[in-house]
Length: 335
Image (cartoon, rainbow, N blue to C red; front, side, top):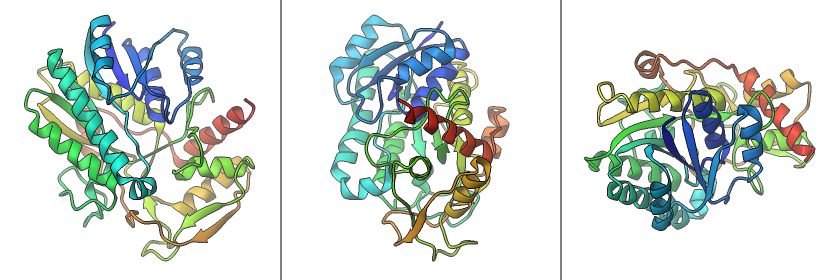
């Protein structure tokens, strides 16, 4: 089995990708500082896969961690998730985001160069497009001035990777990951108040939050709320495995390749709430609040490139996403 380092591997997307890696025959080595994840995710991963996984507690900004990892394991590639990811929070804590997201990538790349390791799958974001002129967005859509520090960090990281000529990168610009593993054993459970829509919906439905705030209903969309491309986290995890397969097949991948990962469909915030309530027969108390700094009006993906090159296509509907997210929340609430 090939050893794959997964930074942020106990987080929401990371933990699901670790499951998919194990199922695909890889040996994931998890590096996580537990700043926005829980150690209990290991139990869920091992219960789902029936196999033990390697976990190392450490921070991506600590170069000594990488030296230890590269000495212990024959790492063939890195999947880099470890980054702060909340648009609204990034507006309030810009320097924290730049130091962690940009600085963390640089520290990783320096360690990879010393270890003569050049294969990287990078977790990027549709926020690099800013407020796009055209939707659905293709990979050829020019990046614009970011609408948030979070988006700016992803843009900077992409530029760094393009300029790092020895590094071979699959850059995945994904849209809005939601849902959970169908087993209900791993899912999105942020520490503190959620910054993303769906965990706030599930926690409100579970009675852990009094009310959900919809940030604006006066946008130029079909119901006035923001439109996003919501993708099931298991679909997203499987796309990372496909990217890794391509990366480790030298004759296939170019030095720097970019792919959108989404469903190709956009849903408004109010439509997501409605889908949750319908599929789970559970009401979500919500109110309309002011617009949130850093939010774009609407964005969803054109996925033709990844569909053709990877042979990958999203399988799950918005109803599947809401059902699995609620199943996970109910299980997590019992703990």
